[in-house]
Length: 289
Image 1 (cartoon, helix red, strand yellow):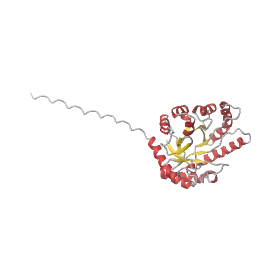
Image 2 (cartoon, helix red, strand yellow):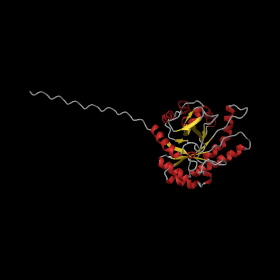
Image 3 (spheres, helix red, strand yellow):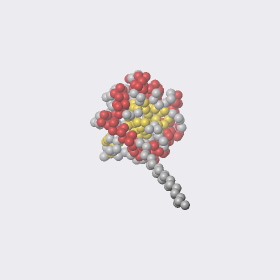
Image 4 (tube, one colour):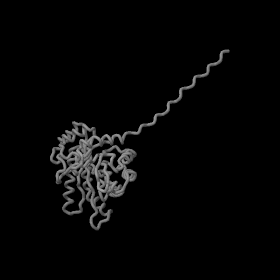
């Protein structure tokens, strides 16, 4: 597995600062949160930067760009959805220029009078030409399991209907847990369709309160064990949403501990050593005649 953190952990940091932190804390890469046509979440804005310069910055530090994350989704509105499709093409173009293989998108909400199946079909019709466009640019669109497609069977329904090689899953443990689904169910169902996993930890008492890994209620170790069980070798992206909740601790207090925990939890189990065979017994000495 490879480990990254999202740039929303560092809302005031430039790309240079974020790369320096990732290198210092021994991450393998960074998930870049895009903010096209949105209120700026972070000072590091890929759409206000030269992708070639950012690519070189990461390459010089021997780091990868794990994913370019958007909040694009199908809205069901006649005027908004063509614009969303155009925006997604811009994300795909930018990801290709960054040599980034993944663009994260959201799904859609169930519109009035629709069933979940009908909503999934509408999402599929909108996504299919965009998946073709992504494939032509060597990019995979990873759909995150947000409501109403929070469970594995629900997002699997969308992917199975399209069966497109440029569509996959960005699995977010928090959304699955809030839907009541355990990793023992979700990971085997989705299996090789998972291309990126986002983890955080939180308590629910009754509101969601983010905390350090291992101090909350989310089954992170079970998730990682299940991913190891299917031979997952992709990205684990740590999600510390400092840009959304300014009261959260600063990244320097959180990111080093997170990578230590993640690497510790994914260490290969020590193999029991085989017992050494007993040395052969010496042959008996014949008695003197």
